[in-house]
Length: 147
Image (cartoon, rainbow, N blue to C red; front, side, top):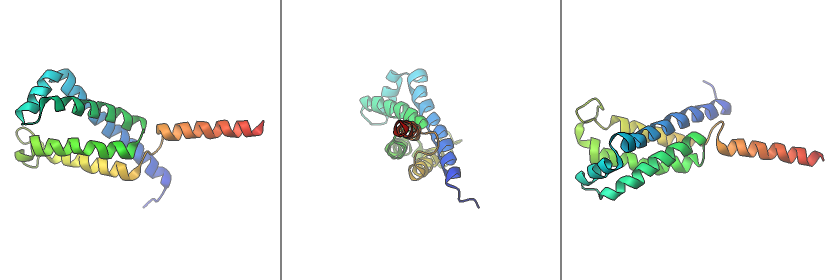
């Protein structure tokens, strides 16, 4: 078993990109395929105020982009979990476990919750905006200290 911090940083990077991409894909599905109006109607059919579709679409899109960039990874990962819980409680929970069940079961959403929790525990990882900016700042400070 490897205990390298470097491996954990790259694991977080892979998970950040995968999870961020998934959230962006789901936001774009709501916007481009179902349309915002259709998504509002679907939310209303679930008994949720229709306007709530807009913050969900925004959270998925902005959160996905922030995850890919590595901006506030822990906070964003945890903040998106209620969206996934909502998908289980309101949409997929009654369809059984398997996502291949009619109308999709709740296994995929549950897995994404586990992935989000894992990413929150791992943190930003390699090539995050925070790490890239702090590396540049430190390099700039070293150059400045030499003069």
